[in-house]
Length: 510
Ligand code: ADP
Ligand code: MG
Image (cartoon, rainbow, N blue to C red):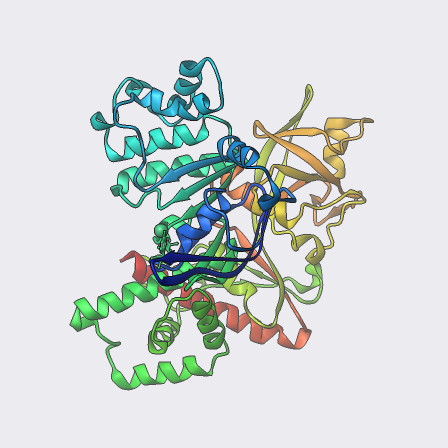
């Protein structure tokens, strides 16, 4: 939807020229939720203003829906700003003399609309401010004012919301209200581009872009950024802890500590991790990174493999059970798996592919027929790993996974029970009352181990977790190792890494 090519922007104040953007390239697709981070003065607002048609670049090309914005007439650009974009700023920018609903109706007035009040009220209701419609900004809290500003941004049904530090002036409670609204808008398919310098806020996005000195220095999408955020948070809290609480400075025994560090150094992960961190533009002492890696030792997690059934190079990683042996994890350490574990596993060099799996039973309905079946949420790669390939239609793709789309791949039993002779492809299927679209149909497989392999539905992992089951833990992680010879070492590495990560998380939760 949005494409910037080689965009530059220089500000001239008096004799001094300052280049705020330097040859920026950027593509943003419709429906993305992007956070722009970076130090103050790094060019975030300048970039957002250009994206929002508020300011033209000096150099380079801005294509919006394939159109070169520079070639559009001024009137067209004004319309774009008014109809396509919604803006939310740190300072709210409400007109003090107007009531909340009147502020919301401003973009409608500019657009020459009638019926201002009902439309404005509708938006105020959507942001939970029904009873505040008649109040002027002075009578509203900061969080409420920002919600009025969001209602104003929404009143023309924008394609994109541009937000510059929207929670910068708010307390934590209002902050989370605003982010809830933003997440809701994203789920409705609105593209969100949001400048923020807070990691907690950026975490809501699917993609984090970091700027430094007028350039984009990193651009990371969901899975990766999640782990990195976690790691950085832990490092930050560790550093803070070290500074504040001198007692906790190092591990109990200095020699043991050094040993850990050496051990950590040997692992290839250190380099990977460091390059991630520098990609993010966050400079942290190498020692801190290594300290993080060295923290976990021992602890539990069992890995089970079922080579005969799954094909040769597959490992199934399941959360450990303390009674199965191994050292107990400290209090607070969760032995359940999250997406962070999955991302860490995917990052192991000998891991070819990995998929989180979450499964459950659900009632499925089409037209007047219903059936109870098994639902599995998986990654896209699962299809190839487990050779679950539709003969009609397709497996879901990465884009659908990222967007948590409601798409389903159904087994032969489902076809039989719900659709009969009708072609299910492209049809609706209700899974626990939620509407999904059938995008693939699996060939009939026959029974295996008493289980009907045809009586199953596969949906994107993210959809299963966040939209269907409301579950943040994975049941298992399936791992495909690159070569047979690496299975044992991968098993150890997975155990080790997961244990480390869980130790950090335990510390983080303390
Ligand atoms: P950020 O939003 O990342 O804090 P900005 O995009 O606002 O950064 O600014 C980038 C740089 O450009 C800063 O050094 C800022 O001082 C400078 N700058 C921004 N706007 C102007 C302006 N109108 N005139 C001169 N310099 C500006
Ligand atoms: Mg700014």
